[in-house]
Every structure is written in C-alpha cells, then in structure tokens.
Length: 206
Image 1: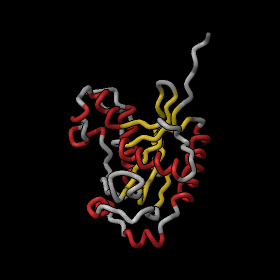
Image 2: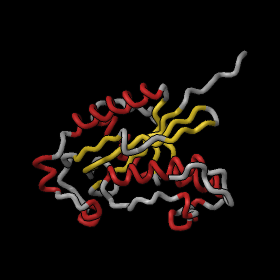
Image 3: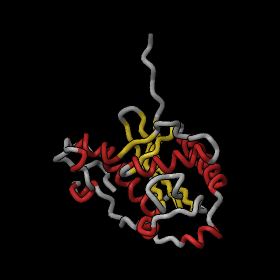
C-alpha cells in the first residue's frame, strides 16, 4: 500500500483578548488572525502577515468580567456592549475567511498561538458555540511555546520569549491589541519554523 501523503498546512496565527479566564462565564472581546506561512513536507514558505489578516471586536456574552483581565486589552466594555460585533456573525465571517485563505493556499488551516492553550480554548469554544463548526477541526492547533521547547531542547517552563535567541523574536511590540499581536506572533512562527536549532540563525528571519 502506498504511503499516505499529508496535505500541506497553512499556519494562521491567532491572538484573542478576553475579560476573564474561561469562555462561557466570561467573554472573548476581540480576536485577530494573520497568515504566517505554508508548510508542504519539509518546505516552509513564510507569508507577509500584514497582507492577509482578520480582526473583530465582539459584544460580551455575559455580565461577568474580571476587571484586571479586561484592563489588559484596554478595550471599553460599555462600548463593546453597544458596538461590538454579534459573536455568531463574527464567527461566520471568520470561518469564511479561514476557508478562503486556506483554499487559496491549497492547504489545510492550522491555528497557531503563543501559547496556544488560552487562545485556542476561547477560539474553539466560540466557533462551536456560535455556528457549531471549526475550520481547524477539534485539534488543528500548534503551540509555538512547545515548538520552541522541542527545537531548543529546553524544558517547557524555560520556553519564554525573553530567553529566546534575539534573532527569533519579532521586532514588533506586543501591544495586547489582538491583531498587532497576531501579526507579531506570525513572524515568530515563521522564524521558529525556519530555525535550524541552537547555534544557528534562522534563514530569512523577520
């Protein structure tokens, strides 16, 4: 039997901002996404994350919120209650965008984040709660923190941006604006994918 060939992957960096620690009782109040790059076998082709991206600010879904969590994003919750996008409409638009960029790339979409655990928890919950479908499936996510730990051969708890080689890190500021941070993390993703490991600079680092 011939070996099954895996489809190429299109990595989409996603960053979310929330007003609490878990979805449901609390709300995802904004999220941004940016195409990082495409992997076909052992070939990774980076993309310009400013070219294809997505951003929405959402109407909160409950009255509960953690003031400290809300303050991180700098978003005005009262304004979001008046002007934020309906979550169902926003998730429909996001699904359509993911499918479009993945189709154009001839690849299967994979969400990536740093770390992915928090952002994926909110993103997947919202996709399923508001529309019942995820273009990433139930497990199509990649954690950049884990990717770095494996490539650098360091414990996961040591995989923090401040300890990464300078050439791996994006030159952009981490602003806690979801789209800014999605673009920043897309550059980190490409640098990690192109990095041959400790002692060597990544090819074409951003």
